[in-house]
Image (cartoon, rainbow, N blue to C red; front, side):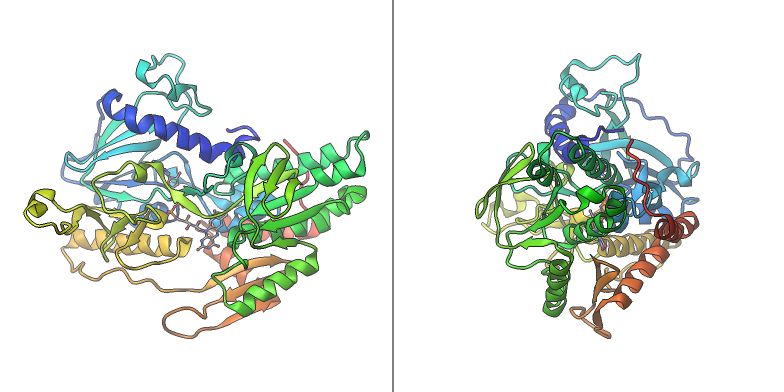
Length: 497
Ligand SMILES: Cc1cc2nc3c(=O)[nH]c(=O)nc-3n(C[C@H](O)[C@H](O)[C@H](O)COP(=O)(O)OP(=O)(O)OC[C@H]3O[C@@H](n4cnc5c(N)ncnc54)[C@H](O)[C@@H]3O)c2cc1C
């Protein structure tokens, strides 16, 4: 497991790892013979990623008739909407996880990163994401890789596929602000939630030290969030509830010194919501004592302080960075595919089929850009992909619906049934928790059907029931409401380990 500080550094580490791997692995990968005991007649379907898109495909694909393999550096699926609750102890971490190996032995699973895809030979190059084996000789050319915090065994392996589903998601966007990866915390994974929870409690223990002045305590208990989207807002709301309840009980003399500040370069927070709901969220935050600094530019982060263009130096004890998405390094190093110029996502056709760059030979005679060609055996879904000409939000809803669509398509292919229907997104609405048992619900921007929206207690009940019922396993359907109840009666657990 990663250390406390790695919560914030995780994405940075992965970037480093990929930067090294993407140019080294292709030349230097030890070609490890890949043994398969599966019946030859079954098509090999490989799923990259165990997130909202990949895990949905894993769940639904006909595993008795396809030879399914999943490659993911995580051995679990992250139920991301619950991560903010996990980060403050409203829920325990395992409520937000589903194990990938649930489908063993029908499915082969490798805890690894896919580093490269050879579309011609239909082969993947993967790097194990497990710690090095004691007896393993590391290839010299991968020396840099093996010195990173979570190095892998250093022995890449290759894996053939007949059909490939790319659902590797995206990384956290930092806009090149120096110091974010070193001193900030991201909230993308349950490991990040754990690091944040540990750091919050550490801040209070540090502030409780006897020799500190109240000003020093205020600095340590200043919790900054950069990014006014749903993730930043929900984390702020959960943190507020935590400070007002359990922290107030356990650290009564310190709770009044704690402060939450939310920063964004945009003029508003939650810009994807209806304007009335945005204002409701801002008013609620003000009432809760959360400072909102919109149109503020964070320029640099250092240990314990950030530089804001409009304010100068701002000290903090914890900084959570949530300013959108950057392309996954695997996606970045794919050169033969069409990509969106702004987001860097791969582009698919309306059937989620990956669009390859058209042949340049054909277009040599004319100056026209060659038409992209759908790859009949590769699909891309989730935050890593977008459909040509259609800008859907990068949400679990879209990733999950695309996963369901692919399941249907792949299973129908086995029967020789019609698979010509393109993907159609059904907007189920957007929910966000804003603290003190209040939430926002907005379906006003959906293309068809009723367009309800609302804020307050009813929206909060909807928020809770939606996430409790959306938990994938029966175990978590029981655990999520149970933890809500237990914490409501007894309070959150404040142990730090
Ligand atoms: C805190 C938080 C709260 C959110 N709340 C909501 C919400 O309430 N509603 C909503 O609709 N959306 C929400 N989202 C957005 C939603 O989680 C994403 O849109 C969704 O996860 C995208 O799904 P995905 O499958 O594309 O990627 P992910 O779910 O990110 O999964 C990507 C998977 O790929 C794996 N991977 C990465 N690189 C590689 C590689 N090289 N090889 C193999 N595997 C790889 C990762 O380990 C991971 O398993 C939230 C996001 C966050 C971070």
